[in-house]
Image (tube, rainbow over all chains, first blue to last red; front, side, top):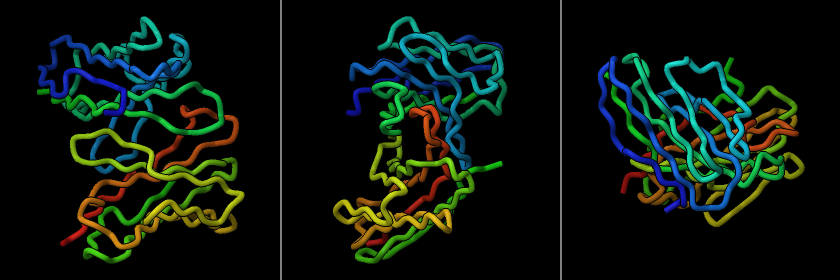
Length: 115
Length: 114
C-alpha cells in the first residue's frame, strides 16, 4: 500500500467512448502527476499539478484532459482515444515540487486498452 | 533524444549472483539519481538514490556506483534473490527541479532464477 489509489485497475474502451481514470492520495502531498507507461519506453510524464494548479503539460493530445479538484484527487478524462493510447497510466504524488528529493509515490496504475 | 540510457533491457541472473544494471546520461545539470523498482501489477517504488558528491551508496544488498567523469551510474544487487525479480528504472533529475524534473531510463527486466 503506497498511499496512492487508482481506479479502475483495468479499462477497455472503444475509440468513441468517454471514460475517466481516478487517483486519490492519502499522504498529504501537494503535487500530483500522471505518467504513461508503455512497453520498452521510458516513463512519460503527462501532467503535473502543484496545489491543484497545473504546472506542466508535456504536449499531451487534447483527447486526454486532466482535472485536479483538490490536492488529494486527480482525474484523467479520456475521449476519442486511439489504439496507440493503450498503456498503463500511473498516478504519482510527492510532498511538493521542491528540489530536495525526487521521490515519487506511485499508484498501481490503470491498464487501459483501446479497441 | 533519450537523456538517460539504460542497459541491458533484460537480465537473467542465478540466485546468489550479482545483478548489474547500467545507466548513462549526458546532461551535466543532473544532480540526483534514483533507482525505482517495479513488480508486476504494481507501480514503481523508490529503491535507492545517490547524489553526485559521493561515488557509492549502499543499502543492504543494493549498491549504487556513480562515476561523475564518465557520466555513468549503476545498480548492483548482491546475493540476488528470486524476490528481486522486477523491472528496474534508473532516473535523473536536473538541479532546481522537483520530482517533475525526473527523466527515466527505459527499464531493465530482471529475472533471478532459483
